[in-house]
Image 1: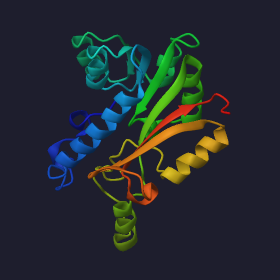
Image 2: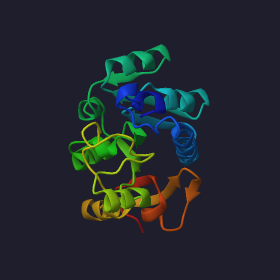
Image 3: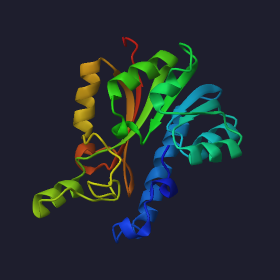
Image 4: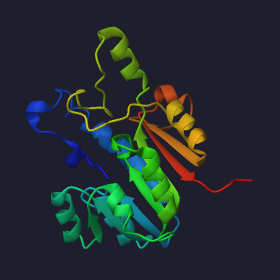
Length: 224
């Protein structure tokens, strides 16, 4: 899971406004992660895919809410997870999922890493193999500030949720909330509930225009 600290680049490569917006990013992610905690029932078995330094997973476990493990590719982040006493598989997400049996978990988490996946459909199908439900948090590339920047400057947007220039970004897929909903319908995955956030908090009106971050709880089970 990305954090503000782990997502920062060296100072010489940051946009000048990055530090000014750090509090906005922190507030938005705090609201998002609090919602994730609310949506995960106590005693659930959780697999955090792209767990970063393990801070969020450790907090879930410390609160006694879940039994959790993680998957993380970065060796430095894995080391930090181990220091926190976490069980973490080092490797990419697909290799990590391959280590687990069918139905090993109740929830898989993809928080902030979904748009970086080379094969999102394959990852989701494997995640559903090992867990009943998936929580995905992703950046909405249709946020109004990005639209205006592209329209008036003719350049790829740089915003609070998209702080890197096009040649620095880890993102491989640039999609909106509407695009993501189309993807779910095409894959026959079901959206159980969603929440949307910007720097002012959680929003419900016109999220495809006004939200910077989205959170969705998915199942592949047939709904009534």
